[in-house]
Image 1: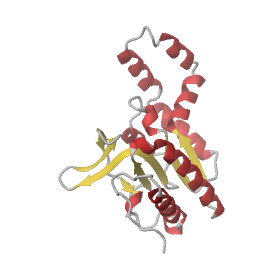
Image 2 (image 1 turned 45 degrees about the vertical axis):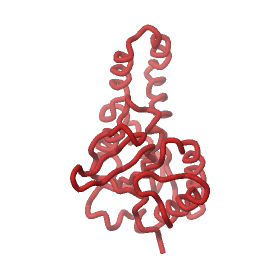
Image 3 (image 1 turned 180 degrees about the horizontal axis):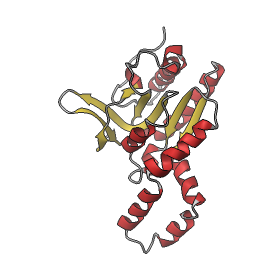
Image 4 (image 1 turned 90 degrees about the horizontal axis):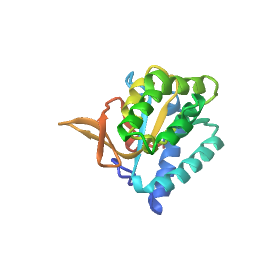
Length: 210
Protein backbone atom coordinates (compact mmCIF):
# COMPACT_ATOMS: atom_id res chain seq x y z
CA UNK A 1 0.00 0.00 0.00
CA UNK A 2 1.28 3.47 -0.90
CA UNK A 3 0.03 6.30 1.29
CA UNK A 4 1.41 9.83 1.41
CA UNK A 5 2.66 9.82 4.99
CA UNK A 6 2.60 13.59 5.39
CA UNK A 7 -0.90 14.13 4.05
CA UNK A 8 -3.25 11.43 2.76
CA UNK A 9 -4.83 11.79 -0.67
CA UNK A 10 -8.41 10.64 -1.12
CA UNK A 11 -8.83 10.05 -4.80
CA UNK A 12 -10.06 6.78 -6.30
CA UNK A 13 -7.86 3.84 -5.27
CA UNK A 14 -6.07 5.99 -2.67
CA UNK A 15 -9.36 6.41 -0.81
CA UNK A 16 -9.94 2.65 -0.66
CA UNK A 17 -6.35 2.05 0.38
CA UNK A 18 -6.59 4.60 3.18
CA UNK A 19 -9.87 3.12 4.43
CA UNK A 20 -8.41 -0.36 4.46
CA UNK A 21 -5.23 0.86 6.16
CA UNK A 22 -7.09 2.68 8.93
CA UNK A 23 -9.44 -0.23 9.47
CA UNK A 24 -6.55 -2.66 9.72
CA UNK A 25 -4.52 -0.51 12.12
CA UNK A 26 -7.36 0.54 14.42
CA UNK A 27 -8.99 -2.90 14.65
CA UNK A 28 -5.68 -4.46 15.66
CA UNK A 29 -5.79 -5.52 19.29
CA UNK A 30 -2.30 -4.14 19.84
CA UNK A 31 -3.59 -0.70 18.84
CA UNK A 32 -6.66 -0.92 21.07
CA UNK A 33 -4.57 -2.11 24.02
CA UNK A 34 -1.95 0.65 23.39
CA UNK A 35 0.93 -1.77 23.07
CA UNK A 36 4.34 -0.69 21.83
CA UNK A 37 3.95 3.03 22.62
CA UNK A 38 6.97 3.27 24.97
CA UNK A 39 4.85 4.93 27.67
CA UNK A 40 3.76 7.71 25.31
CA UNK A 41 0.18 8.95 25.27
CA UNK A 42 -2.02 7.02 22.80
CA UNK A 43 -2.59 9.92 20.39
CA UNK A 44 -2.58 9.46 16.63
CA UNK A 45 -2.84 11.96 13.77
CA UNK A 46 -4.56 11.11 10.50
CA UNK A 47 -3.48 13.97 8.20
CA UNK A 48 -5.29 14.54 4.91
CA UNK A 49 -5.38 17.18 2.20
CA UNK A 50 -7.72 20.07 3.12
CA UNK A 51 -9.37 19.90 -0.30
CA UNK A 52 -10.42 16.33 0.52
CA UNK A 53 -12.49 17.32 3.56
CA UNK A 54 -15.81 16.12 2.12
CA UNK A 55 -14.31 12.79 1.04
CA UNK A 56 -12.80 12.37 4.51
CA UNK A 57 -16.23 12.84 6.11
CA UNK A 58 -17.57 10.01 3.96
CA UNK A 59 -14.54 7.83 4.60
CA UNK A 60 -14.72 8.35 8.36
CA UNK A 61 -18.39 7.33 8.42
CA UNK A 62 -17.53 4.19 6.44
CA UNK A 63 -14.65 3.48 8.79
CA UNK A 64 -16.85 3.70 11.88
CA UNK A 65 -19.33 1.21 10.34
CA UNK A 66 -16.61 -1.21 9.31
CA UNK A 67 -14.98 -1.05 12.75
CA UNK A 68 -18.36 -1.67 14.39
CA UNK A 69 -18.61 -4.89 12.38
CA UNK A 70 -15.36 -5.91 14.08
CA UNK A 71 -16.74 -4.96 17.52
CA UNK A 72 -14.53 -1.86 17.79
CA UNK A 73 -16.57 0.91 19.42
CA UNK A 74 -15.85 4.49 18.36
CA UNK A 75 -16.66 7.67 20.28
CA UNK A 76 -16.92 10.47 17.71
CA UNK A 77 -16.39 14.06 18.84
CA UNK A 78 -16.58 16.88 16.33
CA UNK A 79 -14.88 19.94 17.82
CA UNK A 80 -17.05 22.34 15.80
CA UNK A 81 -20.29 20.76 17.00
CA UNK A 82 -18.97 20.66 20.56
CA UNK A 83 -17.98 24.34 20.37
CA UNK A 84 -21.49 25.30 19.26
CA UNK A 85 -22.98 23.29 22.13
CA UNK A 86 -20.74 25.05 24.64
CA UNK A 87 -21.70 28.46 23.26
CA UNK A 88 -25.40 27.61 23.23
CA UNK A 89 -25.15 26.18 26.74
CA UNK A 90 -23.89 29.53 28.00
CA UNK A 91 -26.45 31.41 25.87
CA UNK A 92 -23.66 33.17 23.99
CA UNK A 93 -24.09 31.93 20.43
CA UNK A 94 -27.01 34.20 19.53
CA UNK A 95 -25.41 37.21 21.18
CA UNK A 96 -22.15 36.70 19.31
CA UNK A 97 -23.95 36.27 16.00
CA UNK A 98 -25.93 39.46 16.58
CA UNK A 99 -22.84 41.45 17.51
CA UNK A 100 -20.65 40.03 14.75
CA UNK A 101 -21.31 42.89 12.34
CA UNK A 102 -20.35 45.59 14.83
CA UNK A 103 -17.62 43.88 16.89
CA UNK A 104 -13.98 43.96 15.74
CA UNK A 105 -12.77 40.55 14.61
CA UNK A 106 -10.09 40.64 17.29
CA UNK A 107 -12.76 41.03 19.97
CA UNK A 108 -14.82 38.16 18.58
CA UNK A 109 -11.72 35.96 18.49
CA UNK A 110 -10.83 36.90 22.07
CA UNK A 111 -14.37 36.14 23.27
CA UNK A 112 -14.55 32.79 21.55
CA UNK A 113 -11.10 31.74 22.70
CA UNK A 114 -12.12 32.52 26.27
CA UNK A 115 -15.38 30.59 26.12
CA UNK A 116 -13.80 27.68 24.25
CA UNK A 117 -10.56 27.55 26.22
CA UNK A 118 -9.37 23.91 25.99
CA UNK A 119 -8.14 23.59 29.57
CA UNK A 120 -11.14 25.20 31.29
CA UNK A 121 -14.04 24.31 29.02
CA UNK A 122 -13.38 22.12 25.98
CA UNK A 123 -11.43 19.26 27.54
CA UNK A 124 -13.78 18.94 30.56
CA UNK A 125 -16.66 18.61 28.07
CA UNK A 126 -14.78 15.91 26.14
CA UNK A 127 -13.91 14.13 29.40
CA UNK A 128 -17.57 14.20 30.42
CA UNK A 129 -18.61 12.56 27.16
CA UNK A 130 -15.90 9.95 27.48
CA UNK A 131 -16.98 9.14 31.05
CA UNK A 132 -20.56 8.51 29.95
CA UNK A 133 -19.66 6.37 26.91
CA UNK A 134 -18.42 2.84 26.34
CA UNK A 135 -15.84 2.94 23.58
CA UNK A 136 -12.50 1.55 22.43
CA UNK A 137 -11.18 4.48 20.36
CA UNK A 138 -12.00 8.20 20.25
CA UNK A 139 -12.20 10.05 16.93
CA UNK A 140 -11.67 13.83 16.95
CA UNK A 141 -12.73 15.83 13.89
CA UNK A 142 -13.77 19.40 13.04
CA UNK A 143 -10.22 20.72 13.53
CA UNK A 144 -10.27 23.03 10.52
CA UNK A 145 -13.70 24.45 11.30
CA UNK A 146 -12.72 25.71 14.76
CA UNK A 147 -9.45 27.39 13.69
CA UNK A 148 -8.25 29.93 14.86
CA UNK A 149 -10.41 29.90 17.99
CA UNK A 150 -9.23 26.43 18.97
CA UNK A 151 -5.74 25.20 18.08
CA UNK A 152 -5.20 21.48 17.66
CA UNK A 153 -1.94 21.36 19.61
CA UNK A 154 -3.69 23.00 22.59
CA UNK A 155 -6.40 20.36 22.44
CA UNK A 156 -3.86 17.54 22.38
CA UNK A 157 -1.71 19.05 25.12
CA UNK A 158 -4.66 19.42 27.48
CA UNK A 159 -6.27 16.14 26.48
CA UNK A 160 -3.27 14.25 27.86
CA UNK A 161 -4.65 14.57 31.37
CA UNK A 162 -8.16 13.42 30.45
CA UNK A 163 -7.88 10.76 27.72
CA UNK A 164 -5.18 8.20 28.38
CA UNK A 165 -7.28 5.07 28.79
CA UNK A 166 -8.21 4.66 25.10
CA UNK A 167 -6.44 5.63 21.87
CA UNK A 168 -7.45 8.95 20.27
CA UNK A 169 -7.28 9.58 16.52
CA UNK A 170 -7.38 13.21 15.36
CA UNK A 171 -8.36 13.74 11.74
CA UNK A 172 -6.22 16.68 10.67
CA UNK A 173 -6.69 18.78 7.48
CA UNK A 174 -3.03 19.36 6.77
CA UNK A 175 0.27 17.59 7.32
CA UNK A 176 2.01 16.13 10.33
CA UNK A 177 5.72 16.56 9.66
CA UNK A 178 8.69 14.97 11.39
CA UNK A 179 12.07 16.52 10.64
CA UNK A 180 15.36 16.00 12.44
CA UNK A 181 16.21 19.71 12.34
CA UNK A 182 12.87 21.13 13.49
CA UNK A 183 11.15 18.21 15.22
CA UNK A 184 7.45 17.48 14.70
CA UNK A 185 4.82 20.02 13.71
CA UNK A 186 1.15 20.16 12.81
CA UNK A 187 0.80 22.23 9.63
CA UNK A 188 -2.86 23.16 9.34
CA UNK A 189 -4.17 23.33 5.76
CA UNK A 190 -0.62 22.52 4.68
CA UNK A 191 0.30 26.18 5.15
CA UNK A 192 -0.13 27.26 8.78
CA UNK A 193 2.21 25.72 11.29
CA UNK A 194 -0.11 25.10 14.20
CA UNK A 195 2.76 24.47 16.59
CA UNK A 196 5.27 21.90 17.73
CA UNK A 197 3.71 18.69 18.96
CA UNK A 198 5.85 15.62 19.57
CA UNK A 199 3.67 13.16 21.41
CA UNK A 200 1.41 11.87 18.64
CA UNK A 201 2.01 9.17 16.05
CA UNK A 202 1.24 9.55 12.37
CA UNK A 203 -1.26 6.74 11.83
CA UNK A 204 -0.43 6.64 8.12
CA UNK A 205 3.05 5.35 8.90
CA UNK A 206 1.87 2.62 11.24
CA UNK A 207 2.07 -0.98 10.13
CA UNK A 208 -1.27 -2.52 9.27
CA UNK A 209 -2.26 -5.84 10.78
CA UNK A 210 -0.98 -8.87 8.92
